[in-house]
Structure formats: structure tokens, C-alpha cells
Length: 343
Image (cartoon, rainbow, N blue to C red; front, side):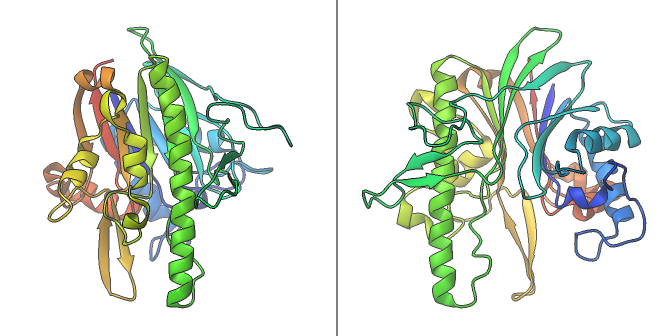
């Protein structure tokens, strides 16, 4: 089987309120890319990765007029994808949902949230609250309880492989960005950066608490998505000791595994894997970063055959296929990550 995670930049802008693709010459939400260009590029990329299961980060919006599942299933039909069914969890207000596309001939999937459901005024019970609730934690060791919420609640999926009967827990996540949006001077950049990193680490602790619950229960587990973080990505990491990625991976016999994360942790200086490419206008250059991961629990590690970042320049097959190489650059500022695994 092949599992994938893919952050599609402003996927929502490619659909109308009925869930139909807008493949015309109007501008997409990507710089200097039309909706037709981005739609065609995404069709090429999704077809090329040919995954049985795809965790879509920044999936189309669900709101009063729009529907994530309808849009994704329409997209799959337009490009005759095997992963033609979709499921999502708790919607959010960012127009960037987290959803799962899957091949119904290979697996079944449903949203299966765990934890205490949000009840106004109720005290937090032991364990991780449900991801649409509130997590109470002292973020800055000031003896004052902070209340943390997910702007994009992680997607919890129970996935069953039809042929083997194997049941896997999937957690799809898109953690808060650390970027100091809205800052106008150096002091504001520092203040917002520290505040955002603190909130992001709290989300990572919350997510890790759910991971620990599944590991304690003996559940085969895969965590996948855009964690907006990695070892050594900014100067504020040393202030808090660990990155979000290290918190979610854990330690010892309860550690999750992703080879790209391990490589980055072992080699802080020198070439590292990257899954995203952003243009920095003030510097007139591109920044590459490792943001997207597929982490597996210990019992699944022997079954994992190959992790692959579909990077247009670093992956030889992508580089040697001009149509795919250009499609990857046009489709999104992130590149898909896939895992081939025997389930």
C-alpha cells in the first residue's frame, strides 16, 4: 500500500460553492498561477503518486455553502483517481481543512475522534481532550493555566485494510505556523515568534498525549501531515529546548519513526531533506524546509518499505520527468511525501 501526505496551497480557491473545479484563466491564490494551471498540475501530481490513502492538508473548505468531501470527490472523479472517496473530521474557520482521500476498494476509513468532548465550564479530565476542545497547560511556567485550542483540529481516522483486516490509526495534523504574521518591527517579530512557538509546542504536547494513549493501547499508529516545524528551523528553538517534531516523535520504546526527521536531527549542519519551497521576496531567493512527515509506530516500522519526498529537484525520477517536475512546482509550495508499507 502507498500512503501520502500532501499540503496543497489554497486548494479551496479552485472550487466553486457547488464543489466543481474552476479550471479557467482566472488567477488562483498562488502567485502568478492560474486556476487552470494549478488544477492541471494537481491532476498530474495526484495521478503520479497513485496513493491508496492521501492525507490532504489545506483541503477545500467546509462551511455553510461549501463541502470538503464533495469537492475532493469531484476532484478525484475529474482526474479518475483511485483515491476517490473522502472523509474529514472537525471543520475549522481557516478555509484549510484536513481530509483523507482513499481507495474504497483497498481500505475503509471513518472519522473516529477520541478524548473528552468539549463541555463549557467542565474541568479537564486525565488524558488528552478531544481535538475540537480546549487543552489546559501552563505554557510559560508562571503558575497560570493557559487554554490552548487547535485552529485546525487534527483528523483522527480508523483505517481498515480490506484484504488483511489490519486496522490502523491515522492522525492527520497541521500545526500552527510560527511565522510572526502582522509584525511591523523587530521587537514585534520577536514577541510574536515566541508566542507562536509557545502555542505550537503546546499543540505538539497535546498531539503527543494522544499518540501516547494509542501506543499504550497497542494501536498501530501513523502520524502524518504538516507540522510547520523541524529541528533547527529557527533561532527560538533553543529557548524551549525541543522542536514540535521531537516532542511528537517521543523517546525510547514509545518513539515514532520518520527517516527524514531522524536525518535532520542527526545532522543539523549540511544538506537535509526538504518538503517545501517558499520564495522570500525581501531576500529574492527560495527557502527550502522539512515540514511534512509520515511517522510510524514501532510495530509498523518493519513493514515500512520506502519513504519518498516527491521533490522536483532532489528526487531523480521527478527531475527526469519534465511534466511532473513542472507540475510539482506549479501545484503547491509543498511536495507530497509517500510511504510504501505492507499492510
